Image (tube, rainbow, N blue to C red; front, side):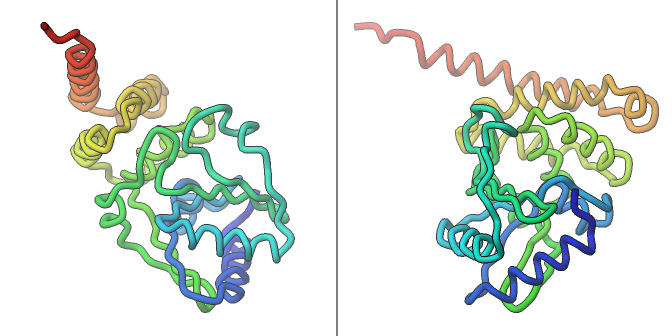
Length: 228
């Protein structure tokens, strides 16, 4: 577990060792801490859109004494898992463009308006709350459901943004995304504290299942043999 002060100290160290400026996108608990929604996290989650930047970041972590962790222990055998490194009390989960069943899309990058600089060369853009929900819906970790509950209770969520991003993820070829998101939000709606205080509108779930049915229908069409 790492708190806000510890996170800031370690990110400043990294920023000062990096030789050139790099931009990373904070998702998950890290983003929630930078948004003052949460005061501690188990891991520091970053998405990179340049392979070279991730390699430079990993090199700095290793210089600081970080050791690589077994991704399968946390994410199982899922696709698009991060490179994981542990340093002191922090575990870094470093994703490359994709987070399990979702892509950190251009629209997500555009929504990442909050920017922080650490040290000389580390620029962190913080994912929008809607996109933190989306990224956390891609995993099966219990703590991610708890974090989504926290975001929904503390932030004003425009569910239309979630629906539009679901369509974008389908366009990007992430076929399992809508199912993962729908299941997570349905499970969320069954939580007593959400059901009473800030229930997810039924229309949102209906739209997601409609998208899923359309996906299945299109997939079945593609499978049909062509007439000779």
